[in-house]
Length: 609
Image 1 (cartoon, rainbow, N blue to C red):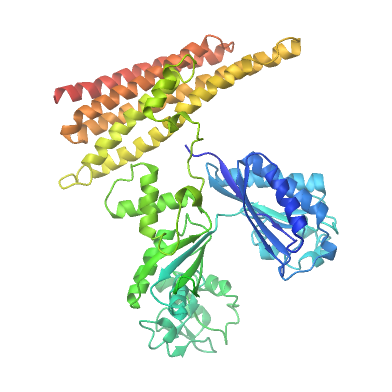
Image 2: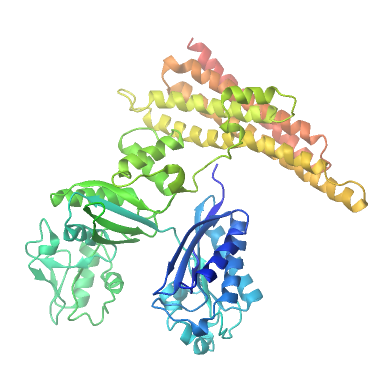
């Protein structure tokens, strides 16, 4: 199960005083639940980019405290540097990594912005995905004029801050806060030292495209003999030999024939579409949310295409890599591998692994580590440097070292057998359900994607995929059931002398019991889903594995029944009658449905024996 994790990358207007920078980063690290990933100071820019991750609550607190500390230590009236800036904390983006939706992250950013504005009296503008005014989505627009423009800017009703006073804060300036996508720094390696060759491909890939040429453009486009420019009466198309007599004619042509908006392309290249004369004609790039250049890396003894992917959900590493492989081959070049600089979000690498498994006509319903390993191998991430999945993948589902699921089987059995009440039936129920789902996944993967299995491939690949999701959640529930029980026991140990203490203890115990009910109820529901999938697998899977499906269904039913038993026993001490009634009804219905589905599976299995 994916834990909630967000990244925060505040930019502070101090890149020279290491003591000030250290005080700010110490503040971030003081918040439990955060992890400082990188501190990148720049003396010439007089700016430091800090990167940290953590749970939403910890990141919100750390971001606020860091902004507060920066406002205390940095005096913007004395600041100078080469980088645009408008505040002590110039910009503070939040990036959803895993287990958090974009909308949730936007709300978190607004909560921090509100605190900064109200508690620190700093004008705050929301940008990117958090922007409440469309014109403020672009950071460059918000920051135009920089710190020096703030006194007049804040008098303009058009530039009233989203939070905080419309009043100039001479020391702290103003801060920009919002949500953006994760930026993946991704480099592709070529078997050449020629920078121009890498640049030639980079310009084909990047969103803003390149200056258009004609004549001798194959195999290397940059060798084209004619550099096209717009001129009065001749407005060439960057994609073909069409020359419009007017700019509008060429705009219409690009839309109709090449299916893109030429006006947007020109704006990306800072060209006024109303006065393009004298400017280079532009050829559209292949990928949106993609920036790319070519360079030579002496330590690797080869050229690279250096790429920034600003939204991997729209433009992925694998699609860019496959396009690069094709473009390189057309130029007589070979892609030897690729490189991720820094960290990569777990979902990004996961989607890449699944893409290549599908290309191989293999099931994606396999363990996560197998999918990630496929991604690493397919991208060639060990071509010029090491790539450790455990260290480089941000948001990777992980268990604590002392988690039950990290134990060896023999140690787990021994732990269950000891005199301690946990782990008990709830954890065993979750394990049983997980094993049931695992067996159905196994049979699906054994059967699908083989000669003669074409008719059932889609059915079984889907079943395997669903089984992996179920067993992943049930694996998490093995420990969660024990944790819920321990939380209830902690509540029982609370002080119990005064009336206030008794009331607080009772409330905590009731909440603990309700949580101790919800975990096994979820176990029962997930295990029931595993039984339903077992029925599909039994009918479509390899007949030689039919008994594995039967064992899996029976194991999953143990998960259902075990989960229900744990719900019912905890309901005895819950005083909320409506809650108890609702849970008992849910358990009765679930048990009846599970028994019915199990009978269907076992009848089918036994008929084949």
